[in-house]
Image 1 (cartoon, rainbow, N blue to C red):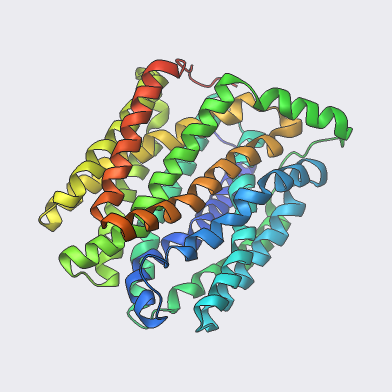
Image 2 (image 1 turned 90 degrees about the horizontal axis):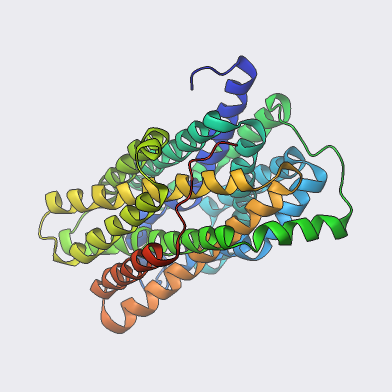
Length: 393
């Protein structure tokens, strides 16, 4: 990023490292789902539980994490979370029972929940105005690049054996050391009285603008995790007989388009209203999900994945940028934790809903249901979403 001093650049790169780790827990193992289902003797409609138990702690405990970050400080929550994430994630490498892996994934997900809350909170703490919009876009772009690379890396490691992708979370232990020594961030100066603290949180959360944005986040991540992350790899395996590494490579195209769009969102949002951008994002989902069951070759799949990636690249950083703008510093952690709770809830129920649709009517209806949901939220956006202004604070 340009026009940042050395301290801001160092802080931003540390935040990026936390962001990259926050997607390791899902993206590196989804290309291996078909092989894991076979090796662990688990039915394919239940393999999505590996995502559900990972995202569940964030869906339930996010508000507590946010309050802790506001009262004890960002670093005092972030460092233990990185250590928990790294240790429990790496222990999955040694496990050979599905139930044991599920238990370890729960604790890894608890650490990941903290990462997903504090990284965006830190951006809101450290940056403001156009710098914050750019930082949020670059952060989302980096997340998308990671989502492009990690499936390929996970699939490549799986060529050694299916459990090798579980070694990647060990990187979190090194990041914890870097955060301890080098992250220089502002912290809330005083611990507010709990009564006033919660009153302020409730007042800022229960607004039409905030509730609408939380709902959009929830829906976006239901589609991402319930349709793309869990059942697209199985569709690619069944339809085109791809290996884990080939599935990871193909999924990387979705994340590449997401990253390119997200990194340019500051420029795009100055030219187009944010309401239009959100509608266009859900329209990209609609087109992609509706057409995937009819894809007859890899080239048509690549085009559809690029289209879906554009929608993802628009929706997530746009929503996050607005949320950090309307949340004040003294309870920004708690405010963003509510958003994280809606995200984790979407990540948790998405694979469950996808599993039910898959078991009842087949995999095509997983994608068609995603298209129906996208259509509904296009209508919601047209009728109920206000024309959000570009963030200036």
